[in-house]
Length: 121
Image (cartoon, rainbow, N blue to C red; front, side, top):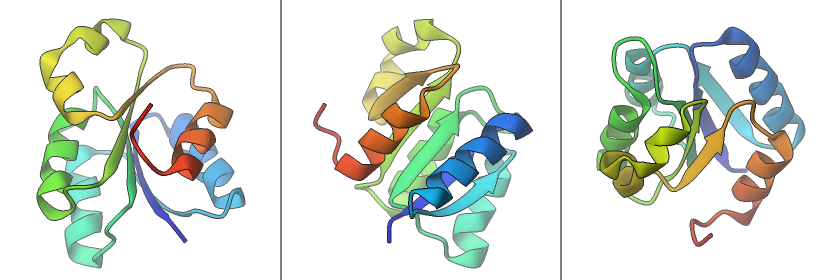
């Protein structure tokens, strides 16, 4: 089973996406804050196959989380959830993020990406 780590500070998004992905058969962990997500990985040895992050988070932004996780798992597939479509032009985002998902997100699209399991879109 594939592992997913969701990092989202809005509880309703974090909880609903977690439930949807668990129903689809994924092993899911979720964090509200950036540093909490890194702790889940290091302290509990939860190495995800997929990382779904919000951009604007308490402590560190979503791209910084992805960069940190890639040090441990360079082939991780990352999805950025955000309402700020201007981030698609941001060079740091383009360099580190595999998929850009605008809010409100479409759970079907996220599931398709995760089930495909590669970043060749």
